[in-house]
Image (cartoon, rainbow, N blue to C red):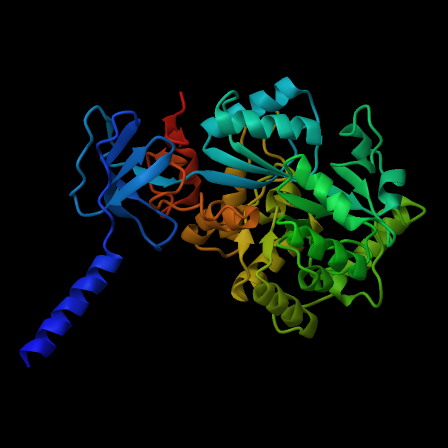
Amino acid sequence: MKNVLLLSLLTTALRFSAHAQTAPDLTDSTANYVVLKNATIIDAVSDTGKKGSILIKDEKIETVDYNNTLSSPKGATTYDFEGKYIIPGLIDAHVHITHGTLKEAQAHLNTALKKGITGVRDMGGDGRMLTLLQKNMKIGEDIGPDVFFSTIIAGPEFFEQDPRPQQVAKGAIAGEVSWLRAITDESDLRQIVAEAKGIGATAIKVYLNVDKDLFKQVSDEAKNQGLKVWSHAVVPPTKAIDITNGGSDVMSHAGHLVQYEFVKGDIRGRHSFESREEVKAYRKKLSDKKWDENTKEVKELFTAMKNNNSILDATLFIYTFGLDPKVEDNVDSTSYHLGMKAVKTAYQYQVKIGAGSDEMISEDGTINLHKELELLTIAGLSNIDALRAATIVNAEGLGEEKNMGTIEAQKLANLVILNSNPLEDISNTQDIKYVFKRGKVIE
């Protein structure tokens, strides 16, 4: 009996030891230590906040202490945040930051960081500029969010008919460079993806004029080479159901996500019409289609997105045109109302929702991700899930969930200190006291 009791006690001790947090090494005299004390920590893991303290060592979180047992290393910089709230740094999952000059991009990113944005996902820009910004933001030569970006992949028709790609080719030929690549059934997808990876892209973004079979091929090749797959939710002629089943990790724009599921056969893209009137008539016919959460096509789409772990980057902000969506009559946008309905329904089906503005900064300097979070709560997300949309869900979309997105030991110390509680009012994400990027306070 004694042996059995001893074995039981030993097993219990081993189990406790396996789950116990390793004591931090506070003896490294070369490290830069920072202690954030007495704040309510909203770590994006649990559903509520809890009072505690955080020890930062260099650029990472060393310890999160909820038991008031944290010892401050000698020489540590200490902040007492009694009455404050700490959330993970926010990630804007849909930006376009290189349509102006490099100086403008640097300035806009600096403004975004001071407003709580510690990471951005660029969805189509000048790969040369993005590579430079990515490096400089990471090493601190420029002060702004970490930059992750995609290379745009589309059919040749897109690059021939749309003037926008040439705006970010600037001296090169859109469709023939590593960040803007035209593909067909005969393309060397292995080489194309390798070139995207070579310039530092996190993902490929499949845009237009790619059928479902070619989408699946380029998606598979991207994942074989360790890149993420991003896309619009609809990539004419390919519908959303085939986009998620084809392997898209993040699908952008909720506005007409569902409507195209009711089209028989292939869907038409923006350049397949001869007049604007024809485009409007086509879209109106789609918008008039009635559906709810029990409609067959809707159930199939959102069930597939959940099963495939596809994230919906809703971009509700871009449909509001700067108006106040809390006043229903102020937003006369079919895409907005359809997008709201799609997000609400996707959320009911437990599809992961990400937060992207599609316009990071307005002319007056407003950082629009905060408005996107408000819109997500209007669409039905809880405040904590709206916060997760801009933190851990977006980190997953980047493939960076091990490094950012929650407040946990060994993740980057990208943190926002708030004066008021975002779980009571999501607009409090704008009530910022300090921002920490990679362990350093941003002045």
